[in-house]
Amino acid sequence: MKKIVALSLVAVSLLVAADEKSENPFVTHTELSYMNTQGNSDVETFAASFDGKKNYGDKAQHKTTYKVTAQYTDDTGTTSAQKYLAEANYGYSFTSALSAEYILGFKQDWFSSFEYQGYTGPGMGYQAVSNDKVVLDTNAYVMYANDGIATSVDADGYVLSSVRDQYISVRVGGKLTWQMIENLKFIEEANYRTSTEDFTNYFVFSKTAFEAKVSDNLSAGVSYTVDYTNLPANPAGADAKLRLDTTFLASLIIDY
Figure (tube, rainbow, N blue to C red):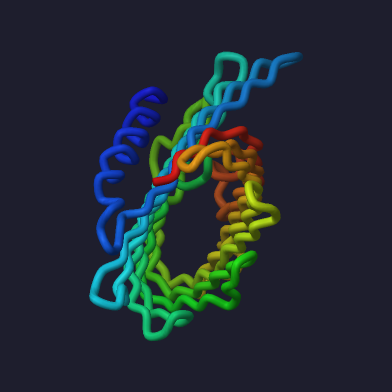
């Protein structure tokens, strides 16, 4: 599974490189990450992510973005993390800074209290800062959410059965990119999503990363990710995993 995900992401990045000579090329950012920690326990983590962006129209006012991530962790022979996320976003730019957007997302985390999380809805994007050194993009969405909440799990933490929870949710977030020096970039990405009906049902995501460019298309990076789930009040979810999931990774980055 890990090799298939990695090869698929690399293949997509290489295929879309053929579009780079067009007026509005399909820009991609692929990360392949691995970390192995040995000692009292042997923890091996593999992660991969793909981000794609394409603008359309005479003035490039239409934009589409795509995001796919996968993570797998083995802790001394036992799977302790297995999660996937996919998002697609369409935006229409009114100005260089302001845009209307629509998002569609789906997440699976085998060891959380959710069998799945799905969400979709409209929003607005605003580029608060844009210069040679710093770019700050912000966004806010009002979405329909459809979650599968676990009612029972097996001994390893996998969800066996679930019930559907449908509600209106709000998500706010942003991404800061700071070109510290010529070949070193700092990136901070974060978002917060909550139910409008139950504010104890919320999710927080944050990724802090440094990327050092080694060639036109290759970079080396390190990242620290925080994924927090305020678990629903059910015994299966409460026992399934801790609310806070953190990951530190070293990455090979391919940009086209």
